[in-house]
Image (cartoon, rainbow, N blue to C red; front, side):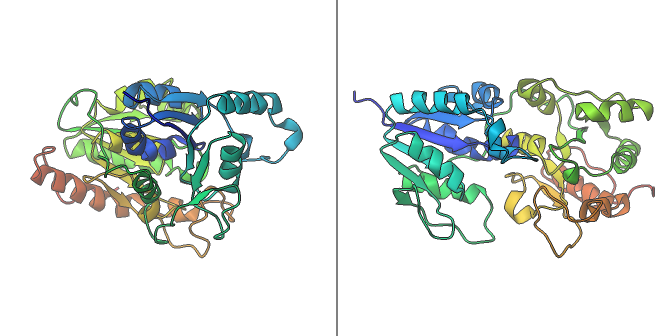
Length: 339
């Protein structure tokens, strides 16, 4: 039996981005000897969903939120060591699903025989094979689908098996955190939504970021903060429904086939909504600068903070009723108490 060709894949950004790449990685690993360069949490995610993929951990300095181009602070020794390891493996092919010349340069430095990706400005510098960009309004997962087609991979399933059954079919998990503040729906709004859910007969658990724990405690709620991706994944899997910000935990829940409701602000749901046939969302308010991703031009991200509980509750209630009709959970009333 001939050895599998060696494939190098780059996904250097957040948890949600890597979750979106997971169906591609699971399928590619069946046909290629895959090595992934990604942030260190990829080692935990890989152990759960694509254990045969070799992970080279890298926190790329250009993925920092602030001061990303202070070159004198870059980990040059770590980058040089990574390059030597990649070159030594003699990859047949390197792939990035981002229109990012920094990724493409890293592919070139890896010594891969072929460098595949989506060129920026239609200028394929550093790439040997250019992939055709999807339509401008396409979901980001479409980039991975097109990349898979280029490698001869058939359509890959969007979902992975749940790790275990939910505690109850009326158990809702709220995740109130996000990597960046501009994506966090106000905690006081979440608290009001939780009270409405409980009045409608649902049990609710709260998962949050470490800097939110004291706020929840001061408001009489016993929130928890998972220590790592593995713990987060097992916590999400205990829920029948997950409600979260536009963030990695929502994408992780969707990967496990858990119905998700997402709260969007500066991002566009058409591009970044969790890939979930049982998902829904509340879209952020209009802004002339949307999508502005992780940077807001105003003192406060009004696109998210002006999405009120009175607007969200009917959408959440309708979402839960649709799930009830599919026997996913037991239903709730269409309208709830006023906040």
